[in-house]
Length: 179
Image 1 (cartoon, one colour):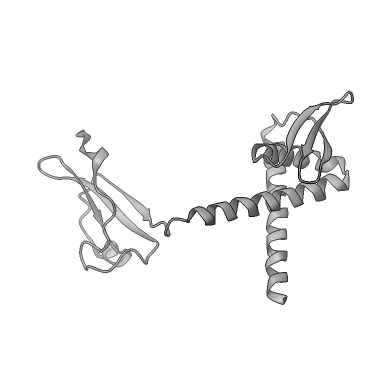
Image 2 (tube, helix red, strand yellow):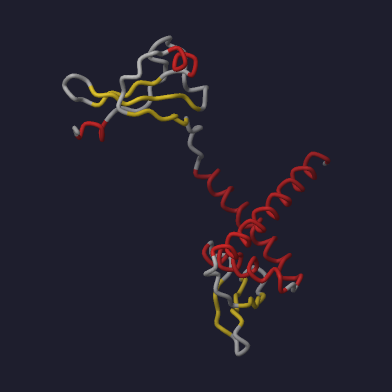
Protein backbone atom coordinates (compact mmCIF):
# COMPACT_ATOMS: atom_id res chain seq x y z
CA UNK A 1 0.00 0.00 0.00
CA UNK A 2 1.43 3.42 -0.87
CA UNK A 3 2.35 5.83 1.93
CA UNK A 4 0.74 8.79 0.16
CA UNK A 5 -2.47 8.12 2.11
CA UNK A 6 -0.74 9.70 5.12
CA UNK A 7 -0.57 13.08 3.40
CA UNK A 8 -3.84 13.51 1.51
CA UNK A 9 -5.49 16.91 1.54
CA UNK A 10 -8.08 18.41 3.86
CA UNK A 11 -11.81 18.34 3.13
CA UNK A 12 -12.98 20.36 0.14
CA UNK A 13 -15.40 23.26 0.56
CA UNK A 14 -17.70 22.06 -2.24
CA UNK A 15 -19.19 18.76 -3.36
CA UNK A 16 -17.10 17.12 -6.07
CA UNK A 17 -20.16 16.41 -8.26
CA UNK A 18 -22.62 19.30 -7.84
CA UNK A 19 -20.49 22.07 -6.29
CA UNK A 20 -22.80 22.54 -3.28
CA UNK A 21 -21.12 24.15 -0.25
CA UNK A 22 -20.23 21.51 2.34
CA UNK A 23 -19.15 23.78 5.20
CA UNK A 24 -22.72 24.43 6.41
CA UNK A 25 -23.72 20.74 6.44
CA UNK A 26 -21.86 19.75 9.59
CA UNK A 27 -21.28 16.20 8.26
CA UNK A 28 -20.80 14.83 4.78
CA UNK A 29 -19.40 11.65 3.14
CA UNK A 30 -15.78 11.47 2.03
CA UNK A 31 -13.89 8.72 0.20
CA UNK A 32 -10.27 7.74 -0.23
CA UNK A 33 -9.17 6.26 -3.52
CA UNK A 34 -5.85 5.74 -5.24
CA UNK A 35 -5.00 7.15 -8.66
CA UNK A 36 -3.25 5.17 -11.40
CA UNK A 37 0.02 6.59 -10.03
CA UNK A 38 -1.05 5.22 -6.62
CA UNK A 39 -1.46 8.68 -5.10
CA UNK A 40 -4.08 9.01 -2.37
CA UNK A 41 -7.03 11.10 -3.48
CA UNK A 42 -9.71 12.43 -1.18
CA UNK A 43 -13.17 13.14 -2.58
CA UNK A 44 -15.91 14.94 -0.68
CA UNK A 45 -19.61 14.70 -1.54
CA UNK A 46 -22.85 16.23 -0.31
CA UNK A 47 -25.30 13.60 1.03
CA UNK A 48 -27.56 13.89 -2.03
CA UNK A 49 -24.74 13.21 -4.50
CA UNK A 50 -23.48 10.37 -2.32
CA UNK A 51 -26.89 8.69 -2.68
CA UNK A 52 -26.90 9.21 -6.47
CA UNK A 53 -23.28 8.13 -6.93
CA UNK A 54 -23.29 4.60 -8.33
CA UNK A 55 -19.51 4.21 -8.43
CA UNK A 56 -18.14 2.26 -5.50
CA UNK A 57 -14.53 2.17 -6.66
CA UNK A 58 -12.78 3.52 -3.56
CA UNK A 59 -10.39 2.27 -0.90
CA UNK A 60 -12.41 3.52 2.06
CA UNK A 61 -15.07 6.03 3.08
CA UNK A 62 -16.09 7.91 6.22
CA UNK A 63 -18.39 10.64 7.42
CA UNK A 64 -16.47 13.93 7.71
CA UNK A 65 -17.46 16.08 10.65
CA UNK A 66 -17.05 19.81 10.17
CA UNK A 67 -15.83 21.47 13.35
CA UNK A 68 -17.17 24.87 14.22
CA UNK A 69 -14.72 27.73 14.35
CA UNK A 70 -12.09 27.39 17.07
CA UNK A 71 -12.76 28.96 20.44
CA UNK A 72 -10.78 31.99 21.48
CA UNK A 73 -8.42 31.88 24.46
CA UNK A 74 -10.99 33.86 26.46
CA UNK A 75 -13.71 31.36 25.54
CA UNK A 76 -11.59 28.43 26.67
CA UNK A 77 -10.83 30.16 29.97
CA UNK A 78 -14.49 30.94 30.54
CA UNK A 79 -15.43 27.34 29.81
CA UNK A 80 -12.76 26.13 32.26
CA UNK A 81 -14.02 28.50 34.97
CA UNK A 82 -17.61 27.39 34.38
CA UNK A 83 -16.57 23.74 34.52
CA UNK A 84 -14.68 24.26 37.76
CA UNK A 85 -17.57 26.21 39.30
CA UNK A 86 -20.08 23.51 38.35
CA UNK A 87 -17.87 20.70 39.70
CA UNK A 88 -17.18 22.67 42.88
CA UNK A 89 -20.86 23.39 43.58
CA UNK A 90 -21.74 19.74 42.99
CA UNK A 91 -18.90 18.57 45.25
CA UNK A 92 -19.94 20.99 48.02
CA UNK A 93 -23.59 19.89 47.78
CA UNK A 94 -22.83 16.16 47.80
CA UNK A 95 -20.21 16.50 50.55
CA UNK A 96 -22.64 18.40 52.78
CA UNK A 97 -25.23 15.59 52.46
CA UNK A 98 -22.87 13.15 54.28
CA UNK A 99 -24.63 10.24 52.58
CA UNK A 100 -22.45 7.09 52.46
CA UNK A 101 -24.16 6.10 49.20
CA UNK A 102 -22.65 9.22 47.57
CA UNK A 103 -19.08 8.42 48.72
CA UNK A 104 -17.92 7.26 45.23
CA UNK A 105 -19.21 10.45 43.64
CA UNK A 106 -17.60 12.66 46.32
CA UNK A 107 -14.33 10.72 45.97
CA UNK A 108 -14.33 11.10 42.18
CA UNK A 109 -15.26 14.80 42.32
CA UNK A 110 -12.52 15.51 44.89
CA UNK A 111 -9.95 13.98 42.57
CA UNK A 112 -11.28 15.88 39.55
CA UNK A 113 -11.12 19.11 41.53
CA UNK A 114 -7.60 18.25 42.62
CA UNK A 115 -6.65 17.67 39.00
CA UNK A 116 -8.17 21.02 38.02
CA UNK A 117 -6.35 22.68 40.95
CA UNK A 118 -9.50 23.68 42.80
CA UNK A 119 -8.67 21.42 45.76
CA UNK A 120 -5.23 20.62 47.14
CA UNK A 121 -4.48 17.23 48.68
CA UNK A 122 -3.20 17.57 52.25
CA UNK A 123 -2.85 14.16 53.90
CA UNK A 124 -4.53 10.97 55.07
CA UNK A 125 -6.09 11.40 58.52
CA UNK A 126 -5.83 8.90 61.37
CA UNK A 127 -9.32 7.69 60.41
CA UNK A 128 -8.11 6.91 56.87
CA UNK A 129 -9.92 9.86 55.28
CA UNK A 130 -8.34 11.90 52.52
CA UNK A 131 -7.97 15.55 53.47
CA UNK A 132 -8.29 18.29 50.85
CA UNK A 133 -7.83 22.06 51.18
CA UNK A 134 -9.93 24.63 49.30
CA UNK A 135 -7.90 27.85 49.27
CA UNK A 136 -10.66 30.33 48.28
CA UNK A 137 -12.76 29.38 51.33
CA UNK A 138 -9.79 28.19 53.46
CA UNK A 139 -11.78 25.10 54.36
CA UNK A 140 -10.61 21.53 54.81
CA UNK A 141 -12.71 18.71 53.38
CA UNK A 142 -12.41 15.08 54.34
CA UNK A 143 -13.36 12.40 51.85
CA UNK A 144 -13.59 8.65 52.33
CA UNK A 145 -10.76 6.84 50.54
CA UNK A 146 -11.91 4.06 48.26
CA UNK A 147 -10.71 1.91 45.43
CA UNK A 148 -12.83 2.47 42.36
CA UNK A 149 -11.29 -0.52 40.64
CA UNK A 150 -14.71 -1.92 39.93
CA UNK A 151 -15.57 -0.54 36.48
CA UNK A 152 -19.29 -0.69 37.26
CA UNK A 153 -18.91 1.41 40.44
CA UNK A 154 -16.79 3.95 38.58
CA UNK A 155 -19.26 4.15 35.68
CA UNK A 156 -22.20 4.58 38.07
CA UNK A 157 -20.40 7.36 39.96
CA UNK A 158 -19.59 9.11 36.69
CA UNK A 159 -23.18 8.80 35.42
CA UNK A 160 -24.55 10.24 38.66
CA UNK A 161 -22.16 13.18 38.47
CA UNK A 162 -23.05 13.88 34.84
CA UNK A 163 -26.79 13.67 35.59
CA UNK A 164 -26.45 16.11 38.49
CA UNK A 165 -24.39 18.49 36.37
CA UNK A 166 -27.06 18.40 33.64
CA UNK A 167 -29.75 19.15 36.24
CA UNK A 168 -27.71 22.06 37.55
CA UNK A 169 -27.03 23.41 34.06
CA UNK A 170 -30.69 23.18 33.01
CA UNK A 171 -31.79 24.82 36.29
CA UNK A 172 -29.38 27.73 35.77
CA UNK A 173 -30.56 28.11 32.18
CA UNK A 174 -34.17 28.27 33.36
CA UNK A 175 -33.26 30.86 36.03
CA UNK A 176 -31.47 33.04 33.48
CA UNK A 177 -34.55 32.92 31.21
CA UNK A 178 -36.82 33.99 34.06
CA UNK A 179 -34.72 37.00 35.04
